[in-house]
Length: 210
Image (cartoon, rainbow, N blue to C red; front, side, top):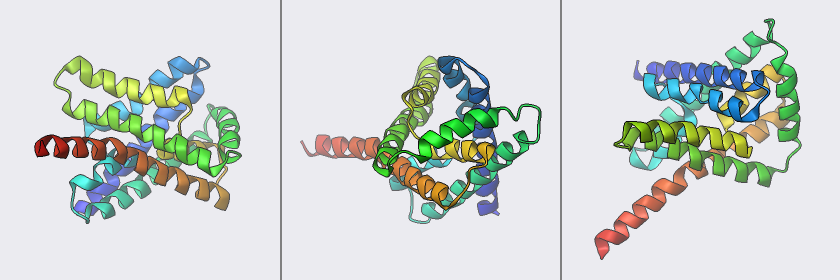
């Protein structure tokens, strides 16, 4: 039952990211679109849904069995984002698919090293957003970390594997090549999400050793 709950909460997180992605695609102004995309992560953290890019940051704080949860979360996120993407294709706002298609073309014509690096930087910002919301003692700080972390990764063009699941779906560009790129984004997000937690552990360990 617990695994089913983990998966369903991941599906809902995917739906939230899909809605945020739809908002971003619907707004011409990139800065405004980046801010409104944040609605996805805002709902996820306030409702306690499971997002791969957030949960993968805490792999080293949990037992090895947590890796199964992370895998289920990735699959749930894929299901949720795909549901939103393909549902939108059947509506009057299906025009967002055209903008998504242009974005996807740029992503899928990029080099894999570039994709990995952009994915790594993305999840450094996601960790700042999620961990800041979780641990910042100031209410304003909690929400600033959330909104700035997400908006900045979008404005910088960094790669978020779950957001891209939505873009690939609404643009309907799935292929073996797309899956390969998504795998690189997934690994890049994981590595990026581990950098700051591991650095913090190392600093803490060195401080205790002094």
